[in-house]
Length: 105
Picture (tube, rainbow, N blue to C red):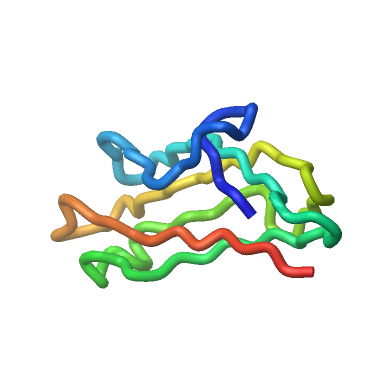
């Protein structure tokens, strides 16, 4: 399984800079996910962990449009990540989060 910043899946993606966020306004980023294995199709899933500060988890949410999508070996797909900041967020000016994208057979 690989996550990339370009459609040709040649530039591995290790971080996303979301820029300046406006509470109440979703922001999107497109990434590319590829099944780099040989032999098994994989069902995609995404989760988050290691929120800093911990209080950002809840007022800030991350979703995507490829949950459950199956990729055959060598197949890739564009995925849209959507980050939403609650209009009622308080005391969070910077944050980080680990995005975990996995594939299971």
